[in-house]
Length: 66
Image (cartoon, helix red, strand yellow):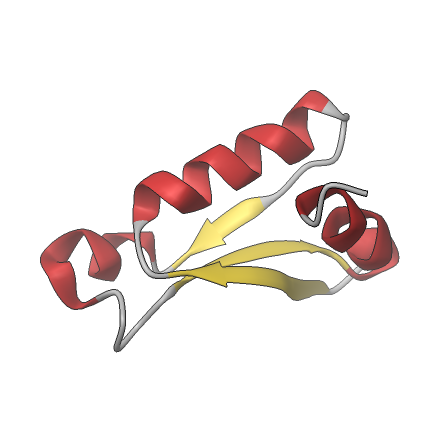
């Protein structure tokens, strides 16, 4: 199943917190571009939180606090 972007963050810490939130609900997620954000250029290349396409709506709802 293809991965899609569920959210994006300017820093790795916020992305890790979001990934942990999804993991606590049993939803696997992967961070893309997290190495570039650690260089302090997160606004240019944000950290992307990726999930499987079938999990996108649930992931976004969990991240929104619904």
